Image: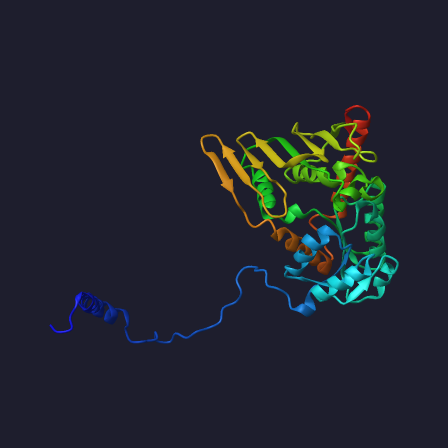
Length: 391
């Protein structure tokens, strides 16, 4: 028993117990008769990244906060796209960003039209203030490029119609960057509503707003009508409006609206600071919502059906959506369909495919025109004290 201690006894006992198991777990390597390893075809339709030389090449027009924080990272994360050029009025900034992202082609707003001669640009993403959307979209289309324009599409119905006409004349695709149509949770909610999971659709609400800060440049231009294109409905309220329409199979027949903001607020000398709106549909469904530059936390949508309801709060942020569904006798169930941030890459990949095949985009210019037509009708109603306006 010399040299035996408690630890050695436990190790010996463990080894004895494990020996039969080890022997049973290691049979001789035997191949079944006639069986060999063979390759199998790709199943389904997986998103396989394209080779660099086959990717759709983009020029990003405007290098502001949104372009740097969301658009450019989205293109870089996509499966089908790459950035080939930057367009900016600040050449130093463009070259610094180019060195960071590996972009070597640069244009400014005076040389913009020469992109017509650049065979390494397939698509143009317009990320300029709203007041410049129509001009640069039309110029890019005339240069023979497909165009994805940030929302809202433009300032007026006439501008939207001119943009659509330019796309048709050039035989190029025109899309409006309604990113939530590519955001997995918003897409899932719309699918559930249209599939009847909450019964017959009865009523929808949407609120969208923030408290504008005069000390932050991205807010300042929104308060200037020439650049912002209009008031809060153009910039932020359009999210709620478009989100509501994403869940319906109908077009509204009438709208009404009233202004809702402090009249003595110095921020609102050129544009209004808030609108409360309502829409009615042929089936009797109604929707209402609010848009504001003077409240905090406005990012929610609610959809009510005859057999349940869905709440999205927040509804359309860059990084986080919270969704719940409630049905009689089932309580509240949380829903999660995917990572919201994938919406940016999915959006440019979707547009790249539309451009490559020259087929309509999921959010075409006609959708942008529809929304601007409704927004302008809301402002006409508000100017008339909330009168009902047929659309």
